[in-house]
Image (cartoon, rainbow, N blue to C red):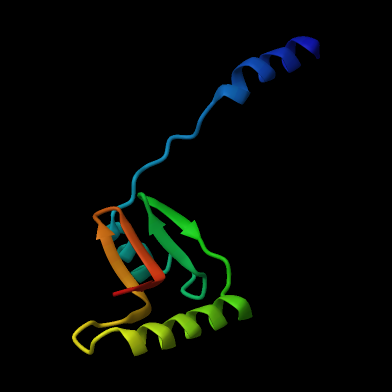
Length: 100
C-alpha cells in the first residue's frame, strides 16, 4: 500500500488536465446545440466557459443605480447597454456588463 500511495503522490498529483481553447463561434454552437443549459448563466472569458453566480438583490440595485446615473450625465449620442453581450476578442464574450 505504501508503494501505491507514494506512486499516486508523486505522479497523479502532478498531472494537469489539457484545456482546449474555445472560440466565440464554438461557444455559440455549444449553446445552439443544447450542450449547455440555456437557463445556466455562463460567460466565455479567455477561451474558458465560466459559470456565473445568479444575480442577487444587491447586484441588481447597483446596476439600476449606475444605469440611472450614467443616463443622466452622458449625452444622448452615447449608447448605454446594460447586461447585454459584448464581444471582446475571438476567445471572450462577456455578458452582464455595463459599458458605453
